[in-house]
Length: 316
Ligand SMILES: NC(=O)c1ccc[n+]([C@@H]2O[C@H](COP(=O)([O-])OP(=O)(O)OC[C@H]3O[C@@H](n4cnc5c(N)ncnc54)[C@H](OP(=O)(O)O)[C@@H]3O)[C@@H](O)[C@H]2O)c1
Image (cartoon, rainbow, N blue to C red; front, side, top):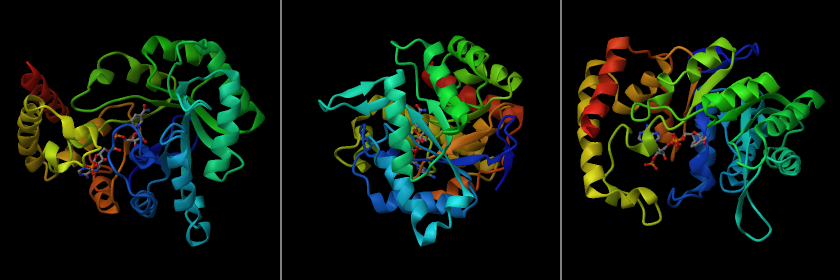
C-alpha cells in the first residue's frame, strides 16, 4: 500500500481509501447486503487502507452504523488501524422528507449523531458535504471550525465546492481536506484551478466517482445485469453503446499497462499532482484486492492525455 501526506496534518494516508456510499443503500444503488458492506470495509482495512469515507446521509446513518459494526468486530482491533471521515448535509426529517442543511442547529445534531453511530468520542475528519444554498458558507465553515477548536473534530474540510466557494471557506478557517468528483469521464478538476488551489494551500484532495458508478469497472456490466431497484438498470441503449466504446478503447490502454480498466481509472486520478487519494467503494469484498492493487500505480502524462481523448472523441 502506498501512503502520502494528508495535507499538512502529519498523517500519511493510503492513496486508495474506503468508500461506503453504496453501503447506505439509498439513492438507486439496488439491493444491498449489510454483511457484504461490513466485510468489504474490513477487507480494505486489512489490506492497509487507513481512511474510511462516509456521510450521515448515506442511508440516513446506515453506512455510519455499518462502519461501527465493521470496526468493533474481533475486539475492535481494526479501530487503531484506520481513521474515519464523515460528511454532514443530508438527513431525513421528522416528516420523513429528505432535508439538506448545514445550519448551526443541523451541525449540532450531526455531531451528536455521527459520534454515536460511529462509536467514537472524537471525530477524525468531518466535511461539509455541500453548500445547502441557504446557510452562508462563512457561517457553516465557522461552525465546523468551532467544533474543531473545541476538540470534537481533528480535521475539517468540504466536498463538491466550486473554486470560488473553496476560496471563501479557506478564508474562514484552514481546511485539511477537499472531496470533489474526478474521473476519466469527469475530468473538470484537472482544468479549473481547484487542484492547484488545494496544492498551494496544503489541502489534501480525496476524489470520488473514479469508476463512474461501475461503468469503468474491470468488466462493463450490461444494464440488465443490475437488479430491478438499481438505477443503473435504466441506462438507455444509446448510453450503454457509448459506455462500451469507451470501455473497449480504455481496455487497449489498460492491456499495455498490465492493468484492468478499473485499475487504469484509479491510476489515472492518482497521476495528478495534488490528488491525495481515490475513494473506492466495493459491493463485495472480492472487489477490494482488485482496487487496492492500483495503489502506488501512476501513468505517464501521455497516457493520461490519451485516456481523456478517448472519452472526448466518444462524446463528440
Ligand atoms: N462527496 C460526495 O458527494 C460523494 C459522492 C459519491 C460518492 N462519494 C464517496 O466516494 C465513494 C466512491 O463512490 P463512487 O460513486 O465512486 O462509487 P464506488 O462506491 O467506488 O463504486 C461504484 C460501483 O463500482 C463497482 N465496483 C467497485 N469496485 C469494482 C471493481 N473492482 N470492478 C468492478 N466494479 C467495481 C461496484 O458496482 P456493482 O454494484 O456493480 O458491484 C460499486 O458499487 C463512495 O463510496 C463515497 O464514500 C462521495
